[in-house]
Image: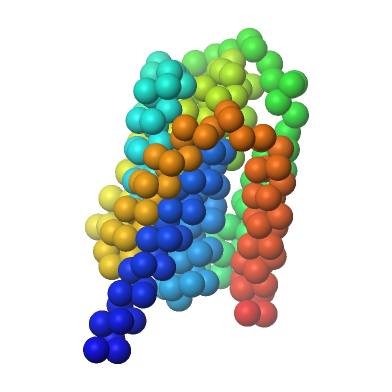
Amino acid sequence: MQEAFGLRDNVMLAFVVGAVLGIVFALLGAGGGILAVPALLAIFSVSMAEATGAGLAVVWAAAVSGALAHGRAGRVNGRVALVFGLPSIAGAALGAKLHALVPERVTVALFSIVLAVAVVSMFRRRSEARRAPVSLPALVFAGAATGVLTGFLGVGGGFLIVPALTLWAGLELHAAIGTSMAVIAMSSLSGALVHLWAGHVPASLVVPMGAGAVGGAMLGAPLAGRLPERPLRVGFAVLALIVAAGMGAKAAGLL
C-alpha cells in the first residue's frame, strides 16, 4: 500500500513539474528542456543519460502542443520552420549519438555552461534585431548546430533559436517564439527517438511529465504576448542561474 501511494505521489509530482515546464516553454519559447533535465536529476534522481532522453520526450510533447496553439494564433512561419527545422532533425540524431561517447561529468559541466549562455541570450536587446534575413545556407547550418545541442544535452535550444529567428530570419519576437516551438518539435523528436532506442527514456516519468507539459503549454500559449516579458525573463534568469550553479557544483564533485 505504501508503495502504491509512493508511486501515485511520484506520478502527480511528475505531472506538476511537466505542467510548469510547459507553461514556461510556451511563454518564452525556451526554458523547457533547460529546466527539465536539472529537474529530473534533482527531483527524481535519474542518470544524466535518462534525464537527457526523458527531457527530450517531455520537450517534444510541450513543443507540439505549443506550436499548434501558436499556429492557430498565426505565430508560426511554416517556411522558416522547415528551413531551420529539417536540418535540426539530423543534428539532433547526431547529438544524441555523441551523448553516449562523453563522460557524464563532462556532460553536466557543459550543461551548466549552456545554461549560463541561455541566461545571457534571454536578455539580448530585441530592439536591435536586424530585419534583413541572412542567406539560406546560414539558416540551414544554424538549424543543424542547434539540433546537435538538442540531442546531446536534452535541451530544446529555444534560447538560441528565438534570437536567431529574430536576428537572421527577420521574424517578430512572438512569431519567433511560435516558430521556435515548431522547430523544437522536430529536433526533440529526433533526439528522443535515438535516446529511446538506447533505453534512456523512462516511461514512468515521461508519460505524466509529458501530459503535464502538454497541458501547461496549452495554458501558456494564449498568455504569450499578454504578460509583461521582462519580469518573466528576470524570473527565468534567477532560476536558471541557481540551477547552473548547482549543475556546476555537481560536475566538480561538490554535490
